[in-house]
Amino acid sequence: MTPATPPPVPVHDLVLRGGRVLDPESGLDAVADVGVTGHSISAVSTAPLTGHQVIEVAGLVVAPGFIDLHSHSHTVAGHRLQALDGVTTALELELGLSPVGEAYRVAATEGRPLNYGFSASWAQARMAAVGGLPHGGGALAALAHLGAAAWQRQATRTQEDALLGLLERDLADGALGIGLIVGYAPRVRPEEYLAVSRLAAAAGVPTYTHARSLVEEDPETLVDGAEEIARAAGETGVHAHYCHVPSTSHRHADRVLAVLERVRGEGARVSTEAYPYGAGMTAIGAAFLDPGVLAASGRGVAD
Image (cartoon, rainbow, N blue to C red; front, side, top):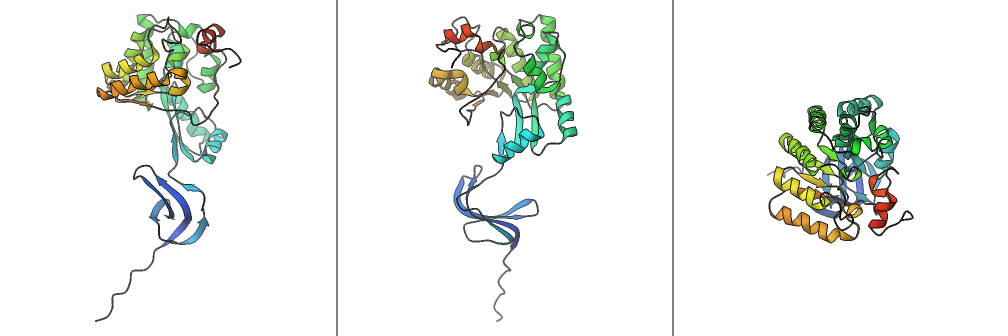
């Protein structure tokens, strides 16, 4: 009998040799070789692989591209910097952009080195529907108007309907959800937040919320920021994503997380995030940077 011929050893286009390979989906965390052929991963193996090109990556991490859910990078240069951190998908979800069709057209025209996507911006839609400000202009326009009182006032029923109409159009144009920076307009009616949450739930997309103040820091708040998000998730069925919990909860993160765990235990869909860095920025006109508000929460301008 003729002995069977062993199968040929596959030769990959590229082999990343000896890195720490992380795969969140399967839980893999091991030193291994990764083979790449064409545009696809062709093998992951703790045994050595053969490749036309071999790159030694011992001491480095090899992982799928990171998805940044909270990116405010809207330029080619910004995306290139994120790529250096391993990001391959940059999503503007907390602030969002409106009209979102404009945002997609600009990104496609300019080109982007990363995958990208946008939520519908409640703030920019509100600037137009309630504040009478120009609709659109990208993130720079949103930041320029962030401290304007006109868009932060309570809406009439007609204005609220117009706001919901703009957001509905954005969802039809491919928005990935609705971003609500309620912390920048903390006197809006809680009923408006619920109406936007119902719109998102009906469309099957999440909301991404920068919460308004906690009751511990602003006893006069119309609703506790954590309870508002939890209530919306429970009452409307929306997937409510709570943006950067530590930076808005400050000394009360344990209480806030307990609120989220409670509603998750009751079946609500709530997710959250934390910054992977120790500093941040915003517009100087943000409502929560008002010196009086800072003093009430035990902080000063120097903080």
